[in-house]
Length: 112
Length: 115
Image 1 (cartoon, rainbow over the protein chains, first blue to last red):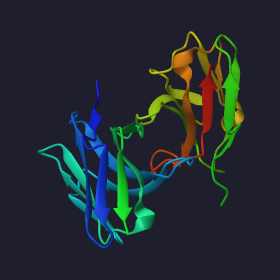
Image 2 (image 1 turned 90 degrees about the horizontal axis):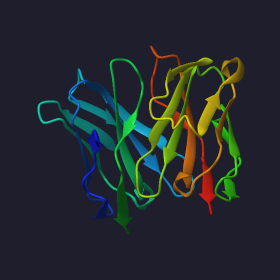
Image 3 (image 1 turned 180 degrees about the vertical axis):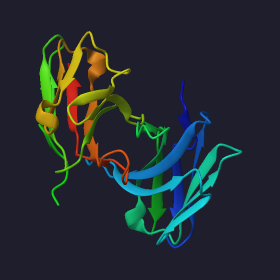
Image 4 (image 1 turned 45 degrees about the vertical axis):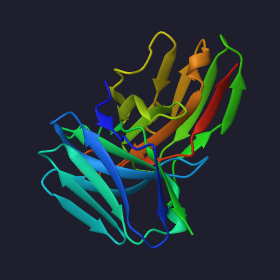
């Protein structure tokens, strides 16, 4: 039972354009969401998070949007840079457990 | 600030052998996690500690996997005996106490190959 889904395994974007990575979840109890970035042979690195009381959180070039009614969140990267090429995971947790459930990841390739 | 330290980085063993992984979390982080990441999948939580107590081990295959966190700091994860399907990257992560910034910080992982 995959509670957190990233339906696009890969995405290619031109440098300078916007990258949009999507994530869907099934459990309405989730109230905290995170995005992680992972380079090869490294552990995931925290990128940005959002609480369910918000619908948007911004940090520099990265913005996360949350649509609770659709159980959907997205990560926008503007402008995209070649160094953003990595695998991006969304994760969710609930009820203050901080038990993070991860999606399967989307491999982003930013073309120079 | 030092990050989460894990060792070894790589391990190759034969099936039915045993193996142990070590993790040293970020200083002061009360919560420690072990995740298993199989190729092409997202990390799957195996066990979550709060200090030296287990918060969640519902996904830990307890017939072959065990984990402990001595004195609420370092942790070891053991597999005995290993199966081919245990081939994966084992990630350790830590975070502050649960009512503070909750994002988890990950180590580089241990890549296990069972042959």
